Length: 367
Image 1 (tube, helix red, strand yellow):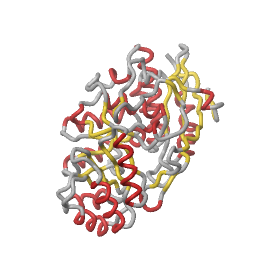
Image 2: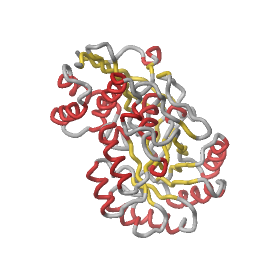
Image 3: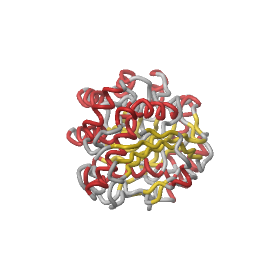
Image 4: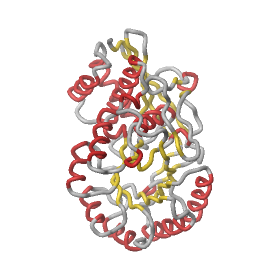
């Protein structure tokens, strides 16, 4: 098999809630997502999606995905897409860094591997470890009462885990955490996710003020070192996200007892190949994961579902159904939320079929 063509699509994903707010005043109203199609000489196509969370979250941005694919494409034509290790070595030799731009190539090759073998991706990623996976709901940063009402609404839809967007004014964040924890059942989980937004002294104030609550603290500060400093000051369970971006940083975090849970974002680390490696390291060391991505629609959600379904339930802290946040469907066969859970399809590969009426014409093609 040989890669013969890459088609790149751009699609806007508006939000049902109209706007998504997180730390330090950042927000997105319409997400800019890139869909990649890899065609091979035997008539099959593999698909993937990459959607950065704006340009101020990680060192990634929507135009960068498409620029990276333009840089990589000449090196991929003629390559065997099922030799995924060699595909990744080729990309790393051609383009230093930029793992998020390489991620859709890696994922599309996994989709092709599933289609070529007739197997769903969760089988290739280790086999079914659970029938379905529990989801969390992200609660956009607003005033405390509004956030509490939204949590109550999503709890009625079956969610039991909630990721509260904080990382703003410390006084307001303390009030947000108290107000939202108060409306939850004792069995529900609440994560206060600062998305790097607090300085060290602000984070120290917040963890002190919420010490008596049942809540997880996620990525309070910008750097790994600052986060570890806060980790040492609180008995609350601790989640690392943005700074755990490679197998090396994960190994360091495990060795230094820097966290109890990580957020494993597939495109952040470069695709399913490295995400699977990091998943296996976490399982080997007893570190549960939220398995997710930066953002996306139906194709991203399917990718998350397959990796999560192949992960033991005790190590799947939660996963994300991003396609339920948006107003635009871009593929059929994608996972659907049922009582706060989702599962991956039993069809070959990702198990999705792109809706080309929604995607429109390619914005770039390489052959």
